[in-house]
Image (tube, rainbow, N blue to C red; front, side, top):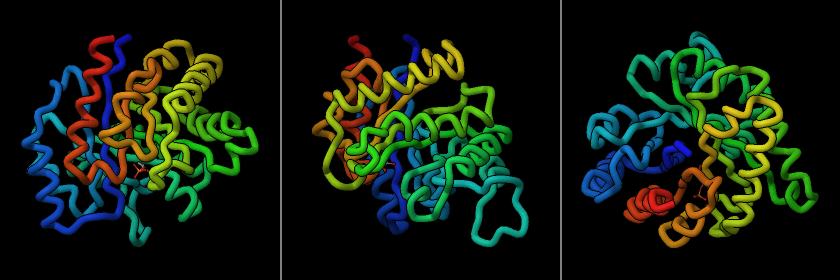
Length: 254
Ligand SMILES: O=C(CO)COP(=O)(O)O
């Protein structure tokens, strides 16, 4: 199948310098599968990116949690894609539901950000996902398709994109989507990409799941054929993140 398992750790707005060093120490000491089997990317807050990058084992990479929608300039408080490239930060998370909901990032704005970041050479973890109300109204697929479409209309090369399906209702709630719920949406997303982008992109893109992933549920989730990894929030700050990385082994024995 050729889709390398991908595990991202989104640290969100957490950590002191002491805590960050501790997390990195734990990650560096962890016994994990080889980089041929799993790609690991951790995403600390901007201010900690340089130190994490300098201390982290070399086969793990770092991601920013956001970047500005175009070239930097008079945009107080923003960090540009150019700056990330300048510091050799290879990845950026864009369109996280917390930014969509709390900072009003629209589908179009996220699409523009994805296109700009890719054009500067960054790799992008693009997040999509429905709220509980939308799920209960039966519009999950419409919502994620509309979010994905806003990206598809603005980019032509998907090779540096990982699509993170992160339904809003299981994020930080301890309520996890069942493996079947995750698999169902991932399959539908692949069908959508097949019909609207290309069969090649549909087959090759990594679609990862996020929302209360833990050491306890990762293996069951990873066993789904269309779940190509995870974007982990709370558990990425804890030693169990190593267990989540190890869930890549489930795929190896497929
Ligand atoms: O938002 C998430 C990752 O980006 C998921 O967060 P939790 O794993 O804390 O639910």
